[in-house]
Image 1 (tube, rainbow, N blue to C red):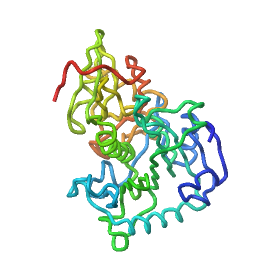
Image 2 (cartoon, helix red, strand yellow):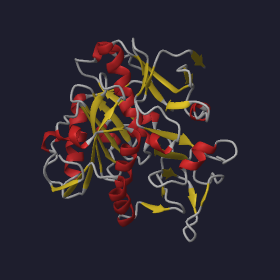
Image 3 (cartoon, rainbow, N blue to C red):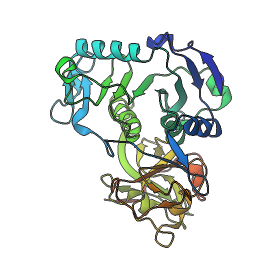
Image 4 (cartoon, rainbow, N blue to C red):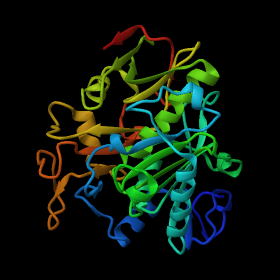
Length: 349
């Protein structure tokens, strides 16, 4: 579909979606802002960022994540507490009910890429019922040009319906929330949680499986930047340990803040945006990231906002300590536009 098209119920038949209402195809940020406000999903804050709440889940629901155990991937996955198996027949039943849930609903589609390196990037599609989740996908993944959209064929699709819940006794899930990956069907379904990080981490899981197996590329949970002499550095660490902060150096150019690949040419970003933890963020300590919280297009997730003045309080952790900002890389003044660099000169753990 074309950039910013709107269709009535057509275009998603390949996913089994046949009776949706309006389908918004890769809408731009301004259109998504209008829809977010119109649907009561968030508030426009002072200086332009959009503030949203995720409800019950304010972080990733690791115990609710599963991978369908099927022949094509069974021998390649280390099954256990992290990679929990899910029955194919249970997936089919749950997905069919999710399809029924989508009947008559407006949907938002973002056709984009995972991976800045054009040789290795993965065409993906993100289908959501929430306009702000569509903006999150637009911020976080690599945007397709209008010419690329004409021939975009997704190799993996994320379908995120947070208001649809599983039935644990029927579906064999651990709760009403679920994140389930089906490699054979090239499909990820998410329900029962509005936490936006599930979208990006699910795609990271896909790349973690595909790139080492199919392309001999090391997938890494790290941030990366490059100095004026071309000396790149990568920073490894778990979520919330400071990768984004360390890589946001005014004297170096940012490649990415969370997920990268390393091939025989060098490193490349998997994403087109950042998802920074911003609790108690200050202009003095992290000026570049602070400025993104005051820009149009940034999503402020679970950040306290005064509904009268529309000013936000980055120190307030009453909702969660895991407050986040999602923004495109272009919100940072010194970036590597290609999202790629040579082999790292420095590796920091």
